[in-house]
Length: 462
Image (cartoon, rainbow, N blue to C red; front, top):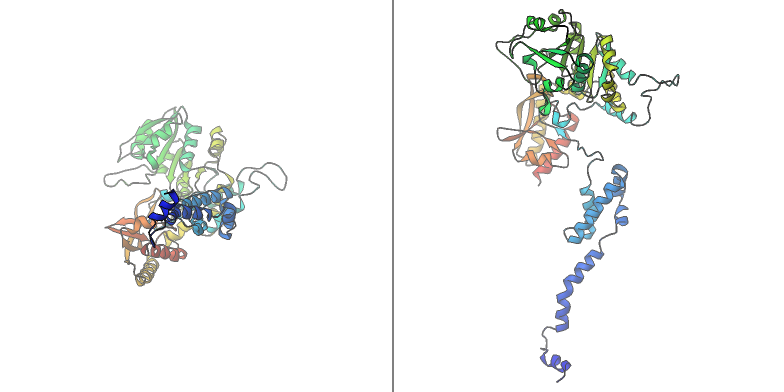
C-alpha cells in the first residue's frame, strides 16, 4: 500500500483532518504574525494630532522614543496594535525640562526639596520674556555695554533704602563665600561658636568659609557669646566679624548673643548672614532678622537668599556699604558666581511686581483655610473618599523662622494615599502624621483646589 493509501485508510470519518490539525497547530504563529503586521508604522503614529502637538512641546526625539517603546510593547503582545498611540502618549514625560510640577501640600511653605519659593505669575512671565535676546548688558540708547542686571539691582536697592550698594550671585552660600574670599582670604573671620551651623545637604559653615583661604577665629560658647569675646579676638589679621542667624534651629534657656550694633562699635566690618531673605520687618515673624534692620544697626554687609522669604528665584543677595560691595563685586570669583538673565528677570519682577505666593501663603487667614478644607472634604466624601478636614500646623521652612508655627487646615486621608498621590499624574506631596496622610492647604493656592481634588479622586478610583 502506498503512503497515500495508508493516510486515507487511517483517516477517521468525521475525525480530525491531519492537515487541518497541522494547520490548527500553526495558527497561533500566523495570528501573532498578523498582529505584528497590524502594528502601525512610526510615521503613521506620529500623525496622531495628540502626538503631533507633543512634538512641538517636547521635541521629536522624545516623542519618537515613546512611540518606539509603545511599538515594542505591541510586539510583545502587552499592548494591542490599535493602542500604540495611547500608550506612547502615556509614556511621554510631562515636561521637556524633566522636572515635574507638584502641588506642595506638606505644610512647609519653603520646602527645599520642592524648590523653595514658587515664583509669582509676574516673575514667570518675566522669565519667558527674557528667554530670547535681551539688553542684559547693553544700553539700547547708546549702543554701549552696560552694567549687567542694572534694573534688578536698582529694584533691590529701592526695596532696601539703607543699602549703599547691592550685588547678586547664584545663591546665598555663594554670597558668603564671595565676601569671605574678597575680604578675608589669608586673614581671620571672627565668629561665635554658637553660630557654626550646618546648612542643607550636610554642608557646614566652617568648611565653607575655610575653603576660601580664611581662618576662623572662634569665640564664646555654644549658648553664650558676649561682645567682649569678640573684642578680645580682634587683631591686625582680622578680616571681619561674622554674625550668622541660626535659621534652622533655636537655642533657648541660658543664652546670650551680641547684637549687631554692639559688634559694629568694635571698629571692624561686621557681616551678617540673615539667611532667609527677609528684606524688612514682618509682623508675623518678629524674631526673624531682616536686611534693612541689620544695615540700620551698622552692619557693613548683609547676605541672604532670594528664594526664601523674599519669594523669588534662587540667588544670593549682598547688600551694604557701597565701597565694600564694589570691592566684592569686582573680585575675580564674582564672575564665576554671577546669575543669568532669567534669574535677573525673575528677581526684578519679584521685587517690583505684586505679592508673591510665599507672601500670600504666609498671610492667609486660617479661617479661610478651614473653609477650603471643609468644602473639599465634603465634596470628596460625596464621591466615597475616606477624608475629613482637620486642623494643622504649617511652618515657614527653608531655614526661616525656626520654631514658628502657622495655624492651618488639612485634608486627612488614609496613609496609603501618600505614595499614590506622589506618583499620580498630578503629583501631590503631603505629609504623614498619626497614621494618616495630611494634605495641608497653607502652601496650596486656592486656584489649585480642584486639581488637588481630582488627584485625590484619581487615587480613590484605582
